[in-house]
Image (cartoon, rainbow, N blue to C red):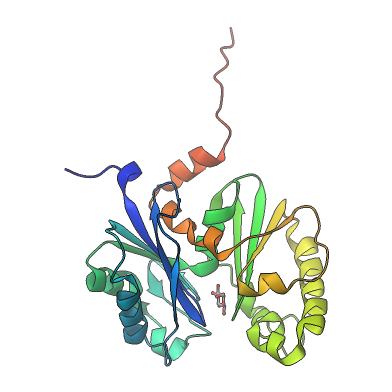
Length: 254
Ligand code: BGC
């Protein structure tokens, strides 16, 4: 018998520049176990990354579907770019298909910030999600509906640097917390003016380095929150919308 969506368990994987994290979710996005992680292999070729995921999930409880957040531009499950893992290894690699074959379950692969966005937004108005890690992740959602493929990471912010280079891990290591925070303030002020978002969420490992007071409509999210988006990928977009919108009361006009 075919399982209905509410009964499925989902293996949710977040592939990052430094670590690969994974957990099992129920279809509501609740974690059924703590997430586990391994270092991202080097070189981070598709074969090495898939092998690392296989090892990481070996002891996991049973799951029905797989969701993956990938750090690059992904279209229909096929990777187009992977700035921090190596686009030369990944361009046009069908990660959906190959992961499904390797783990024997249907898989859905999307951009990592898009997956985190689906996991954290409230579904109210324009919500922007950014992640501060190896690279600069970005996702935009309107009333809970994702506008995919926003790659702020590669937009130039100065003459010589993209957002990835300006505010990513390497910049933090080189500049130290104080100067990096100054840069982040500048980034946040640009995002506020450009997007006019209702809420901004900030995730990624380096969000914990923020040392200044944030506006009231800015929220810090954790990796745990982000990985929950894996459940949303298996709920139809109409269902996402239904969850996101207030229930409409029928009014009878006479
Ligand atoms: C990639 C994005 C990704 C971000 C965070 C950037 O380098 O281009 O797609 O979301 O890193 O991992």
